[in-house]
Length: 238
Image 1 (cartoon, rainbow, N blue to C red):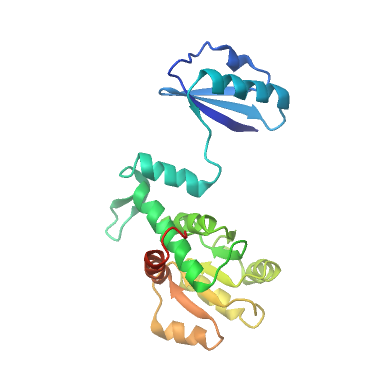
Image 2 (image 1 turned 180 degrees about the horizontal axis):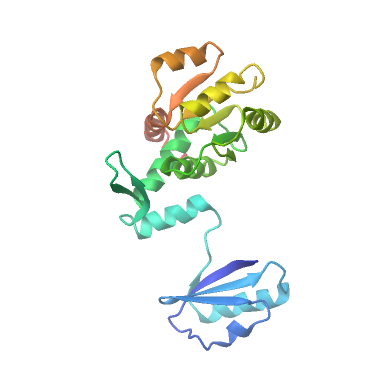
């Protein structure tokens, strides 16, 4: 297994530079005007320190961002109109979401969760297969310091009961109505749940039905709208 140490802009560096032979470097990759340096998870700390000092003194370089939301923020700043996600629309054609849109949607979703009462460190169930909203929700959760508890739609009722009870999730995100119904059917056993958020639109009838168990049911779009207003009222909080 490797992990990235840093990305070096080869303004002065060349592929023959001696630091590629440093004992802590196990792999290099060249991408345009950049060199990516990798190390093993077990490396010589002193050698790594010496390498970092050499790079600081002699080369222009940038350390990789520490979190996924920060990586997306950086991409949104550098390539705002580049497609970050592609998905099929209702007509079967492909549409795209840019890095700028992805970043803003993620922040809106995170802000919506804050408005609902989510706090840093809270565990949030994420029951969904791969789709564009999954990433947007996941980044939004991370952006506010919360933690997702993911599982796919193939999870059985017993799986969900075990996972969501062990983690005491108050908030659960579900991909579709089928997943909402699975979770709602477990309401008597999952007493901690107060909110369910569905990626798809939900009817008022279903919202009222779920409300009888003292659970609020909202759609993904509902959370985005709440988050947009929250960010206007609380600038720079997310």
